[in-house]
Length: 590
Ligand code: SF4
Ligand code: SF4
Image 1 (tube, rainbow, N blue to C red):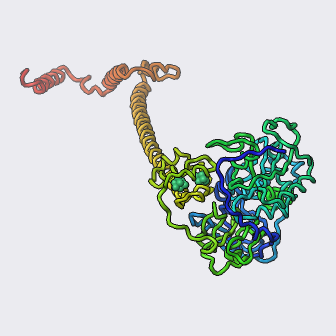
Image 2: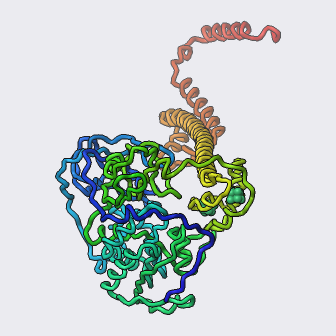
């Protein structure tokens, strides 16, 4: 026999599962209008692929997975996309998000499906298939399964504990569709190279465990082997050992870390996850969805939802994603004193703000509440520090300390006390003699911390943008200054070149005159030294010399009208020149 381990804390609330677990799963009728949110996973919304007025087929992709952590969204039936608009989601925040409103045509015409042989396909192709099928954790976490299936592990745990009171959707699924659950588990085990697969089922579900046993018996290799505390290395690396294990009914045995602890003895510490210790966990519903996606090509467009609590007809329904919760509630016929509806169980669920919201992939149970079934809590009393909450906490936290710091809004201290390791199981509030709604305080503190982190992130982004803008402006200013300086230098160089060209032109003009052989030589081809590189002063001297020679030449060729005068005439001219000279002479010299 496999040795089982006990996790710390835990409580044993009354299960109240009989009524809904008694009847087989019933297919919910096709509603006239379906509202399909594009955000169906814990890690983000899908990118919208359809527009209003477009016709879609059942299973057609209407939102593609974004990035490595994205998850695809599909049309749950064939029909017409009436609108793409923001609608309220079934979420504690009550916030709205983009949804496709699809009017069913009633024909249920499927898109062409493309199944895979999981044992004859590359694991990456199988993983891509799971991603494209939009499969997320159906235990309530809605984390994309293809991301979880990436790790190489030693032990795969398929979680059929379903520990929360009232909820029975996994119980009925295991009883009715055990073969597909086991197929999905084997596919997941192969993807992660798991050496062994454990199905953990609480011992208050013997029929479900028996169905899985029968399904496992028909699967190769069928031989479950006992495992001792030291026996982790006892299996051959290629062997895949599958075992169905009944675990003691103790809430919250279905918590991931708690089930890992029970089945393997491994205690996952704060801040760590199962894969850090070679263990990965999937819900039975997720394993079933994986088998449908891979072996039949069907995307995740429906899930099993429990109707429990104050209903005339409690039960489990196979419901299309996007079905209005109002329409689903009507199938169970809520009793007249129903005063609110909780999505999830009484320990971890939350009250719906509005029952017109749609069923989503994370909707495992709708619990109708009435004052008779769930009496309003009596007023909370002061904490008496009795320590009952600490003893009940399965995560070994100090709930009363968390409560004090959350109440005082000392969020730094709540984080020091590992607030984010709290799985909101409600065990502490369940045992608190002062009836303090402890989990409400933890949720409040978590949402405040997340909001502040978002604000800080937004402020950091704004600061980074501002600093980048300043840097860009400075850089542009500097670049402009460099450009202007370069332009000025170019202009100056151009002017200098033009000046030099002018000087050269004057010299060449003079050199080109007849008789001016010296400068003509400078202008000759090949005599580039004098023509192009002579300093300016040398050039000026050359110009002066050239001008003198030109003047002399001019004088030489000027008309000589005094050359043939008589001596008397010449004497008169000389006398006149002497008088002119006397007149032109400066006065002081006169
Ligand atoms: S159980 Fe309640 S009263 Fe007791 S220590 Fe915890 S919070 Fe305080
Ligand atoms: S709700 Fe959180 S603090 Fe309370 S018992 Fe559960 S894990 Fe511990």
